[in-house]
Image (tube, rainbow, N blue to C red; front, side, top):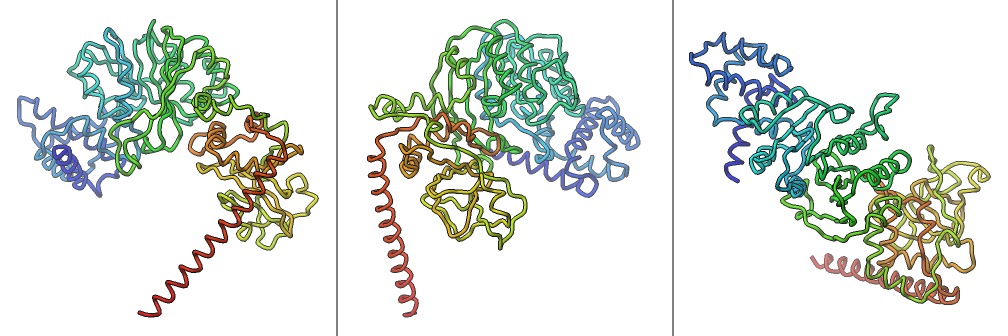
Length: 537
């Protein structure tokens, strides 16, 4: 740890030396140019003069395809002599401690999990956009010295740095190419470790080579095509791969038809420094397997961005037959875990009547509102107004609009409201107000259309552990999780007699009222006590 701290301190001392001459985004390239000049000096038979060093520096900058970092020769010589006084800087240091904000890094804990796919006998290994895997690259290469590595980068600078890093290793080839192009390589590989670009679309209007236009989805298809027999692709993809429709659904079918899905692992939020996109680690193989391993990882720290991340821990794991997964049509692992959950099994085995929610209720999204008016005639229930038990009507936004224009969105007494976006699942019952109200577009409305369903009973069910799990399994999204109102239609709910539902609802409301009164009484007593005690000071 002290050694790492010393290295970091040295590098930032260097960065301080060039501050004012270079911007933070240029620190990395500046350090690379200087290191290369030092290497040339050390390998030279003759001592190089100041003019020679400056000429070499300009040539190296040109070779690295970066601007001359030192237009002032004297500034160059000052920084050069400062760097010479440091302990040798490595190429890994350069990648690791440049402008961290501008980089996408694969955490070492995730690299460790991906590395478990190495099998004795693997000859050809591909790591595209390899700079993302620093500082683990050298360890991977040295640990698996019997394998031949191909490292690629789209960036000409990183291509140069990686080439320098492994210039003396015959088992490593470095190439400047893009995995988002069909013919990025003519080779096939035993193992591919990849974390592609998230959320970027191919700018080409016509892309007949691939099913999807998103770079991450292109990478999944393209890299799979470059697997050898019994080869393995370990790739991180955004959550959209598990539920997306259209071309993404077609890609899922392609993968399952042409390859074998070996494992789907849910990765925890916050493990990547530069994105909050929800991600999954997929293991795809050209080999054979009848079972798909399903995993959910958690981190060993509460906040990995703040506290760091040492390892990923498997919280849940199970398996599903590949044919069953294909029949599902998506890769919703929450639903798989749900089907094997003890509460779910107990529910399925119970004698209580069960029915799909969509057969006894109308489910719809609220209305998008662009222009609000504090004095408007129509109240708007937003996510922030929905509490654990009730709706806060005192802080509603308002809209000035003719009631007839929002008739289809007007809330009715007893409507059940659920946030459509966010991480917290809250369920509340709407109670009729002196003025008309609608829900915002971020709120889902569930309205009973059958006398056999009490929405208060439904709220109690959704507040139960099993009900919460059912709602979680209907969440979709990347950075922000969404509940699809269409997905709620097929949720199977318990439906005892309406008399029993009303009995349960009446007791719930009675006890909730008693709870609120007790809380209010306790708060009043506490306020009175504080005032009395403070009066004695």
